Length: 249
Ligand SMILES: Nc1ncnc2c1ncn2[C@@H]1O[C@H](COP(=O)(O)OP(=O)(O)O)[C@@H](O)[C@H]1O
Ligand SMILES: [Mg+2]
Image 1 (tube, rainbow, N blue to C red):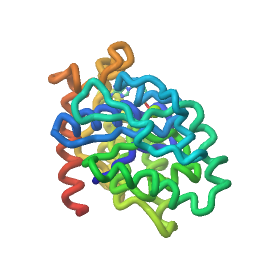
Image 2 (image 1 turned 135 degrees about the horizontal axis):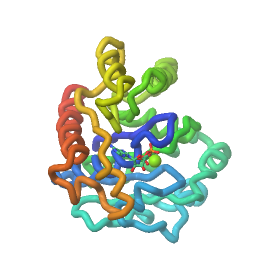
Image 3 (image 1 turned 120 degrees about the vertical axis):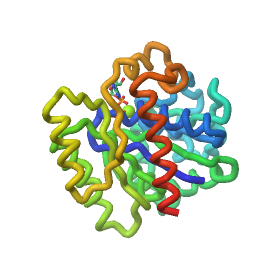
């Protein structure tokens, strides 16, 4: 099982949009895929047509409810979702009372590895202990950024944070989202990023109103748009991710 987390300290940069579309593309590529929503807002699950579970998500930590009890099918073959709900806002309080909280988080993930090829986490915009435990165990952290010098700094902060830790993700790679090449700050940032010691993907996702319409259709963009600019960018991104994953094997 390969695990990928969409993460940025900033909100509104495209973590959820990207998590949903990459999960859809992984499933479309015949991989058994789980999209695990860690954001109490529960947007990733909602986009996949999955409503809040009756079983509150926090119960996997507070009451030892098995993760499989939360897992929901979606309208898409091979794609299941572990939905989030507001109860997850208590994750860190619950974990604080546990012996070996990191191990507990890893233990939650383990049963999924039996029949899952790709596990994608949609993370909230924070670096709380629980999110640190999730990120430190994944193969790849993807950091979406709206192009600006400040967003590159935020990515560096994530890298620096894990540099000094005993456990860290195997790879941290950034990519640009909502790119508008008519804006100087965007073209400059894309150009400058090439000279920085940061791992940034070649492909980027352009600003595309079709991406915003996901909340209207309540579906992954890539499920209903084959030729749109953002949809095509996500397809190129999925191919690039596959080669990144091969190189870090
Ligand atoms: N490539 C894009 N073009 C236009 N709008 C986008 C694009 N990617 C995301 N958005 C919009 O930006 C907003 C924030 O995206 P979201 O994925 O929810 O960010 P995050 O999960 O980081 O908070 C949403 O309204 C979404 O529809
Ligand atoms: Mg989000």
